[in-house]
Amino acid sequence: MLADLKLGPAYDGFLFLAEDSRHPPSLRSHHHAELELNLVARGEITYVVRGQRLKFPARTLLWLFPSQEHQLVDRTSDSQYYVAVFKPSLIASACHDPAYDGLKSRTGSGRPVLQSLLAPDAFDFLKNLMARVMEGSLDPDLLNREGGFGAESDFRYQHMDPDGLNAGLRHLMLLAWRMHQSGQARHGGIALHPSILKALETLGDDSWEGDLGDLARTCGVSESHFSRLFARQMGIPLNRYRNSLRLARFWEQLQLPAKPTLLEAALASGFGSYAQFYKVFFAAYGEGPRTCLRGELFPSPADRIPDKESA
Image 1 (spheres, rainbow, N blue to C red):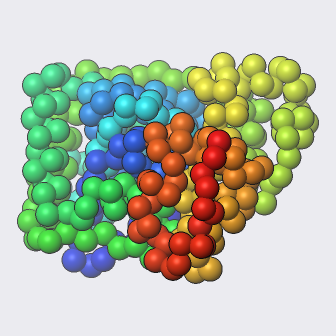
Image 2 (cartoon, rainbow, N blue to C red):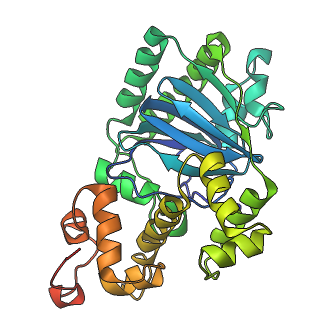
């Protein structure tokens, strides 16, 4: 899926810090015209790229190029990772020396993801630079909430000093590329079985409805074998992945013009009941949905939201 990040003309890209504790998961497989850079500041994140599942621990610097379809499939509960994107126009204007030709690629290297493990001092320097470039951005809670699905909503990235941001992004991109070249190259990943790739495609279809047996039959394997294979290859149980998908769809539901209630959004996202939704939501964010939202997305009367949040 080609995602439109809807960056305004004043911006050469954007930068924000994604945190598991407040960043809604965005689990749709996608690519975009912009070059993407991730720096894992804490914990671990997991992507599926080019048919492989790859885990990235803290201090990993990774690049996702415009034609690389990628899907975030899991994060540890303590994860923090910077996400920066750079417009093609910024790359064209900033990269003249052949040393930076790699940034102009649409496909990256022959490996699924171009990645390196930074030395501790280089990691600290780059992390601090990213924090400084972010100064003047929108509220972190807002950036995290919209960073999960902003490409599909009316959200627009903003910064109080676009010129300063653009200068910072240019410097960040070139410096990160030099650090990548001197970092410890990382390789490896788990090549996913065709049935698992089929499962990810099937589960990503909002119109698909079915249980474990239906999914196993769709993927051409037995139910018991499929469940074990999914957990072994993806590193997480199938029900955890499905619940993450449902949470992602819940956040998308809240952006619909109809402004559904929490119950309506939960049911439309695939949860069987409000109680099931509340339990999964609380496990993911450490608080109930009403507390988490703080009324920001529900300016209409309180009776639009169920009065009780019970597990």
